[in-house]
Figure 1 (tube, rainbow, N blue to C red):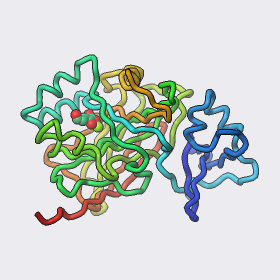
Figure 2: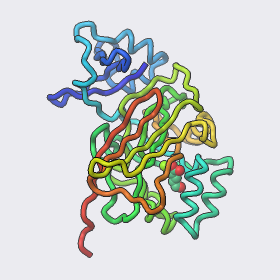
Figure 3: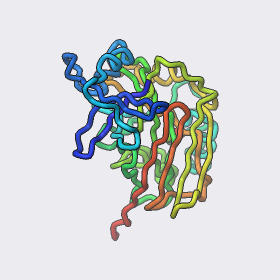
Length: 294
Ligand code: DO4
Ligand code: MG
């Protein structure tokens, strides 16, 4: 089952079950249950699929998916990201950062993974909302990442798509600049739906494809499979939860296995599409302001 936040033309947002085979969304009536107001409340319940089925509003006709727009599927969760979890990311990071190359090499094999805070809902873009390249970056890329939806008990309850926008030049100049390379306004996109984790997902058969279009032409396309991930999902969640509490739950991007070649940088007006087996397609336009005069 897939859950989403759908936005109506008047701006109201409702939680819905999305059925891609039937091409329809069924709105949930959250008011039926006490203390259930948001998508996260459904996700954090003991049985999200059972509760969602129970809450389907019989008084609202199913909506055609082509008439629906999606909002980022997040409420008050913190968004974190793991890094250097695929060989491709390790190699790319070592290339971009001469002085810190050994750190990337070591973190790829170390028991403790790289984990960093990416933001909360205010920094997240939903489908078709802009993602941003920093005006002070000359080398930025999207990072297409399989993203875990985690409840306050640190159980994985769902999966979605994340785009960990990254300024490679800022990160490469000095590893201490990582928060500036990774965390800024519109630095991450999420969506379009959350696939509930009660349905099995075969990692090797789950593919992530990144496509970047410029002026209507594909300028980059590449794929990987979750089978290339160098760590287990449970291991990443376990490290995130150590000495930490997430009373509102968390989303965890699991790292990128697709990196455009070193000569590539995103430009204002580019269009990023991330497609993931069993979840769908996350599409976002790219914006970049002109640098401010010195
Ligand atoms: O170490 C830098 C960040 C790595 C990252 O974001 C990734 O591998 O996806
Ligand atoms: Mg990343």
